[in-house]
Image 1 (cartoon, rainbow, N blue to C red):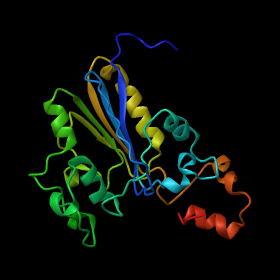
Image 2: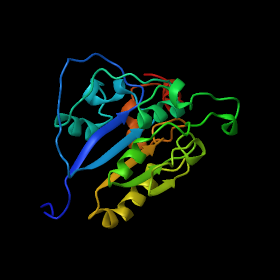
Image 3: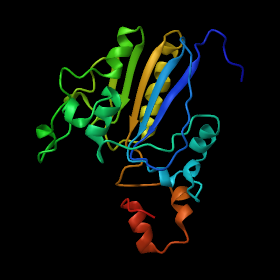
Image 4: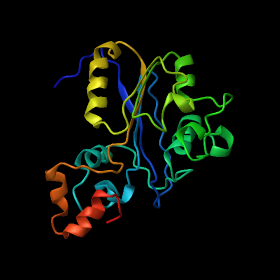
Length: 223
């Protein structure tokens, strides 16, 4: 399919795979694309060691693996926190949890700490620099309750347990509106977070395991 010359270039700045860690070579890469869009995708709780591009032996991630072949693959990545709220606040503010404030969980959602007002989000910076900012997130810990809506021209919070297809469909509806804009998209999903309910064709990848171990897969344990 030929690309419309009127469309702005698309630069995927970063696909955020949370809680990744491994070793890396020292390498410096510079991108110059002043007319590009910025897309930030967060696949909450996705493990590096369960992706083919990071050496996993099952074919669980063919599309990500194909993308990685022509992208910059980070091999030395560490999350600042083992859970969603402080990790995402750090991604969007470039601050440690002790600096942005969203790091404590006191029994219930209403008692969780929020991003401090003096912390500036990436969405706020890009909006000031002429980007149309879009947030499509699966709410809960990445929601307006904690301050994640700041700086977005358009934001939709999808139910945490909804299929990612709903979020994708929403983005597809926005595409005509975004074609002539320079935009920033923050797309967040809990699709691989437990509780798991995989399609049979995906669960079949684990057919060599007995039923008790398959149950562990569904409950999110490491295999």
